Length: 412
Image (cartoon, rainbow, N blue to C red; front, side, top):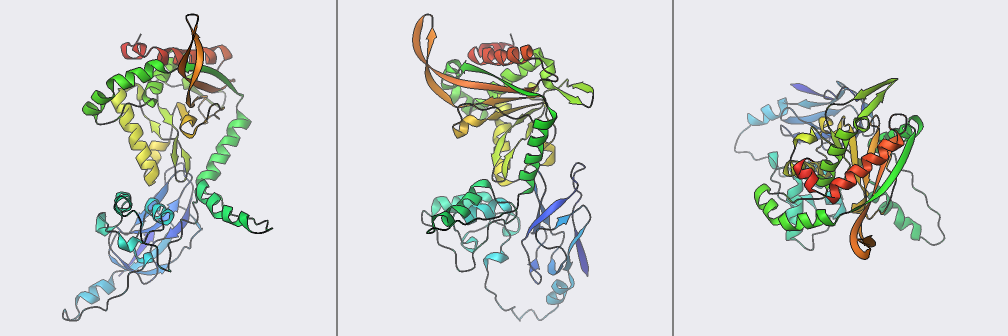
């Protein structure tokens, strides 16, 4: 019996996907739930698992092809498995050497294995059907300080979704050749193409301005140091800076509802809820999962969601529901060392807050020069909807909330 493997239903906002890599080849034995192929959209990488065990008899779509919902990808023959079961049980099938290509790998696992030059056959998988998980590879790296090199048949990195660092690493050795001026052309990933499209759209379709301020982070730092251990013991998560910024932003958004609004044609949509997008770095680039109803979460709830977003982003497991929507966005360039920047709007939102590195600087307090941990804040906004006065006051309200965290805790 031949079973057809088709492209699963894509979200309503997604027209098509790019087939980036097959994990099985024609003639390979397939177990139920094995990942057959990865499909890349402009936001996430989708895995297509096998609905049944059998042998992959035909591949109809090759790497790099565009596909839409319902397209026929491959066929699996289930009769071979049935026939082998009726053979003489005394006869043992000939043993075949396990190669790297026989081991199903998710995009995140494949990326780690390639970066660390590992042999997946040397790692014991604890996932479903013996598949390697990200934790399996990390544990293996921790236990083996000098991992074995791959044999001749090396695993290629995910070809259609190279992250920025991997592209630089591929090109930089070529630049050291004597007198050579090499170039390398690589296809733009779906995510990078979508980011480029949206950034260009934001610059062309919005009257974007940026206002700046600075905030003394001493009070927040003192509060974290005082209660960090008790917070971790009770909630099993660290108290970070982002939860303070989200809380301060929500209080400011309540005071200035225009900044939580968006423009739809000639209409203004005022949102009565607070869905805050958090810019997160992933192997595929910068993505923005959305913290739904952030005003209804306490500090521990916010921190747990942020940790969950970070883990899913690295593993490529964020869903469309977690990436769609949002009424306001926060991005933290400080974790990369940025001192000051002008963040670009995330359409159709009309404002985005940029955090930056905390640096000790001399400031004047009560007529005296003292050293304090200072962070620059940047608020980019759409001047079509937000007046300059409201933008400045909104950013100052965030500054007040951070410099006096009691206001956030007491809701005053």
